[in-house]
Amino acid sequence: MIESPLFTAVTRNVRVSVRAFYLEDQSRPEESHFVWAYRVSIENQGQVTVQLLKRSWQITDAMGRMQQVHGPGVVGEQPVLEPGESFEYTSGTPLATPSGFMRGTYHMVEHDSGEAFDVAIPAFSLDCPHQGGALH
Image (cartoon, rainbow, N blue to C red; front, side, top):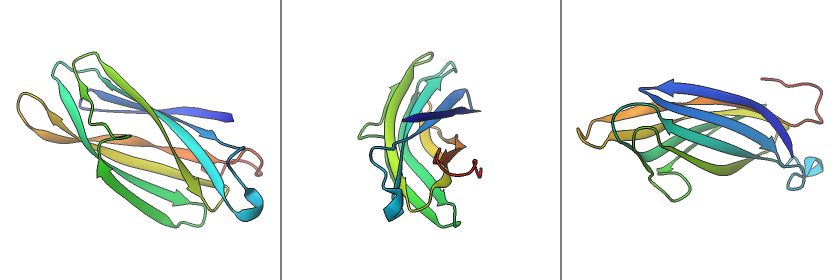
């Protein structure tokens, strides 16, 4: 497992940090099957309680093929974050190419007001360490 850089974005006092890891033991390059895990930290840096309700991802491979993923919560949870709290989880994705990138949005709501808002998940690269240099 080889660690990539940390990518971070802040939207409305919610900080999202992502780091991807190439999973060599689960990848089969000879079959065009490359697998990454990514660890996400979501931190409420604001003064109001927020809840993550849904997620939307765009996963793009090196050929420009894009896959959209939408669903409730993350890893089966819809975490509520009080001011100063954070939530971390790990997930993963396969690609048919040795590189690509992901970006997305968390659809959240302020607990007290019920106001819905979107939080950016920063774009982060997925690069196989055995290919000739990162493409993204």
